[in-house]
Length: 106
Image (cartoon, rainbow, N blue to C red):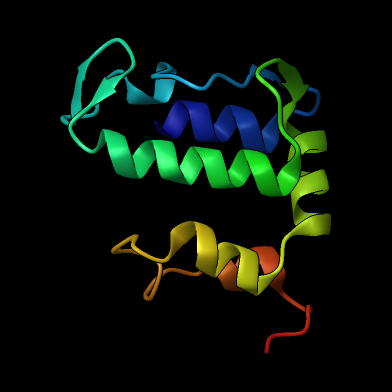
């Protein structure tokens, strides 16, 4: 995971293929039960569906940094709360602060 995160954050022009199924990041997850099958399938699919709807994403190749900039430009605290409301990390993480810093919070 550290290698993937380093590549995404530090290597400009890194291309990714956005997939609406299990992927490279899922390969070592203990919740992965099989191809496109997760122990927390309903929750994962809900996160994915809402993210796709809010940001108009498609299952295709993207330059990671361009994708993140586009999401950052559109993201609001309300969107993130809707997407991540039942994530156990959401209340204690810096996700909203990092993504929506400087944006109006209701």
